[in-house]
Structures are given as structure tokens and as C-alpha cells.
Length: 165
Image (cartoon, rainbow, N blue to C red; front, side):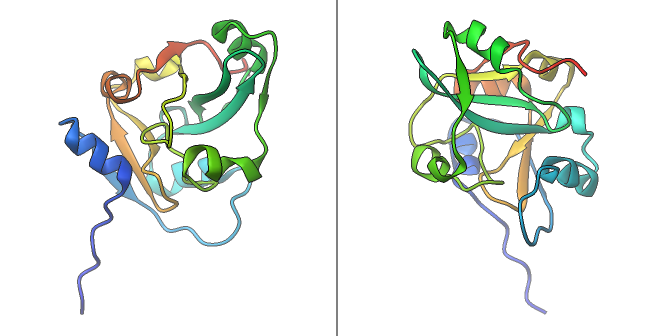
């Protein structure tokens, strides 16, 4: 039986070049990317939902395109994001714009290695963990790395940007 080839994504290449330690966790995925996609991945990988971060892309009227990472079991608070970014209003981009802006498809968006370096905000709850999970840039793989290392490669800011449950 042939060995399964190890997945290597652009995200992993960037992390390797920056000499960042990370772990890769692969998972199976077929079909539509639904509303609970992040929760499904969390359950499949065994990484707690509050430690697994989804990457969203928003647009502010002043800042333009921004990247936002929040736990998969949370919702982004657009008003908080607007306040943190100095915008009056922030809105989610339309999914059809996603690949053109980021280079990633829905379900595989990572804050690491986008086409351009956009301002990036990660919910401050990430700082409670030694490692957090973010997409490896494809559906089927995630990377676990320290919040400090994520900041090193994305220049992200840790802020309170999720809605309270």
C-alpha cells in the first residue's frame, strides 16, 4: 500500500521559513462548507472549539480589508472590530470575493500567507492557550501554533472582538 503523501501548504512553508514550531492536524472533509464547519472540524480533530480559530474577512469604510480570527464557537462582533480598527462600520465581505482577496477558498482561509498583508485582529481569548489552531490554508488541514508565533508571522493584534455569549 502506498504511503499517503504529507500535506505541505503555503502556510506551512511560511511557518518553516520563519522557523516557527507548529503541529499539523489533518481531517477528512467532503461536501458543503456549512455554518458549523469549524465546530465539525473541532469535534473531528479533538481540538476544543474555544482553541480552534476561524478566519473571517471584513471590510471597513476606512481601513478597507481586514482579517479577523475568532473561536469557531463564537461570532464576530462587527461593532467591536470597527472600534478597534478606527472604522465607523465594518461588514463581512461576500464569499465570492474571498479567493480574489486572500488566495484561499471558503473553509481553507488562514490568517497566514494571504495575497496581501491585511490588518489582522485575533480575539484576545487566544492568549489563554499555549497553542491555538488556525487553518493550514486548505480544507483538510489545520496548524497548531503559539499565539506569539501567530503574531510573529501575521503582525496581528489581540483584541476583544467576539460577541459575548
